[in-house]
Image (tube, rainbow, N blue to C red; front, side, top):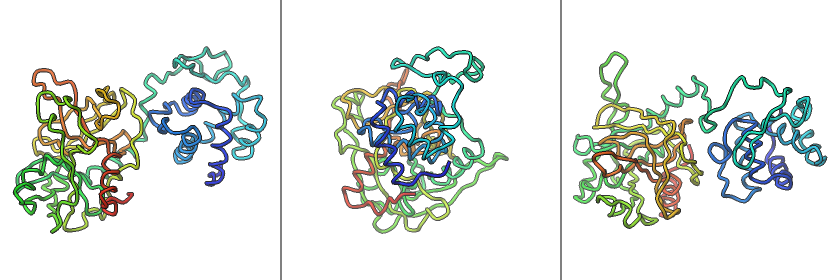
Length: 372
């Protein structure tokens, strides 16, 4: 089908809002894509029309609009106006109808599958056991990993490893405040530098990478951590809205050229418990490594507006300031903290990236973190 225009996207979203609720929408999206609406596609806390508009935009980007509209078309036999609009925008979605329009395998409100009939294509031959785990194109995933690794750096103070950081603009690096706090407190910001491309080669040797110094205005903006997070009871009291534990550093040169940077999201999407999460890090100051957990996201303690994300992905000393990423290499959070329990730690923790963007923009430094 042809790409939809902005006007057509808005028209479609408005029309669909008259015939679906969130339960319907979740079912249609699952049938069409195999992924859960709130996990992969959009933030369902918005008004329904906004959810639909953002969903259609994402579907267009992924080439899945036709599948989604087919699911709507088949399941709205009495809405001639909706069917006519779909036929106009995506004729193939209206033409390719299953022999029995009720044989799409749907989920009820409790996420239970309805029973498919014999006419369903390939009944019983496959199952999407973990719909939150999207199948990945290997070539695209490897290309994304290569690009990601070039954007992550080891934070050094006077030549010694202090933590991890990553590019969020052509000359801007994000890390934790607690990683650079000692140097900043002693007015020794010139001692801080960022080492990119420090990695182990395939033959076992090391690429020492490229060291980039900070500019004269090294520290653009920062926020402290919550005092309780340096104790054995990190949730008492919970962190305040401005206790985000980040430092935005300005490099002396444009390290982002050729590397690109992570775009801090405009807002944080909803992540369901068990969603995957990747952390790219310099554990113990060593060469860059990946930690991947396909069932990572954990419940976060109350209150619900608590500005933290918890997960089970592994980290180690030196990993503070690492980017937390989706399986598609999208930035989700800034890793900053681990469970203080020594015997059996239960969680790692990060600061949602959208909160950091909002704080940086509110402080007047939005130009340093442009979209990628």
